[in-house]
Length: 173
View 1 (cartoon, helix red, strand yellow):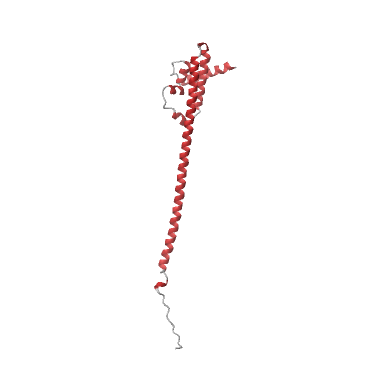
View 2: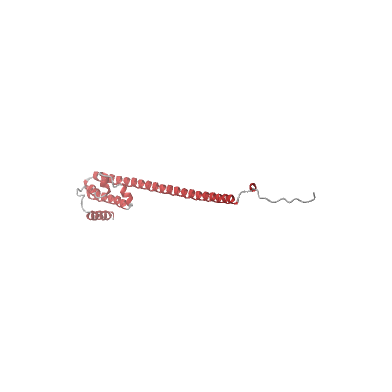
């Protein structure tokens, strides 16, 4: 009994996974990490797009509010000019010449302020008709002077407006 018994070494299948299975687990883990990274990048990009859309909507809303405020201010100035024109018509005829010059000057100020606006603000009020249309352009001079020739060329009306303003300024000196 003193002989030693040497047992052969065997690799039994239950001692560990096959090397192909180990490689499959490694590839699956790397794929999972890549999918999570891609999902995170897509989520971040989508969040940036939503923020940009909200910023654009806020900018559009601010411009719309600005345009509405400018339109209201223009309407108030036109109403003020119309009130001055009505007051000038109600004044006695002895002041007729100086009153019509003053009315033309106030209409010229309103028209000059409206011409300083961007084209988008002119578009807002371009669909109005009647008395408000007359206060936006060529018809205002005919109303202010009591003249029925509203279809004169714009060059002639501009020259008359300049002459009227020159007379008004000369009367203050």
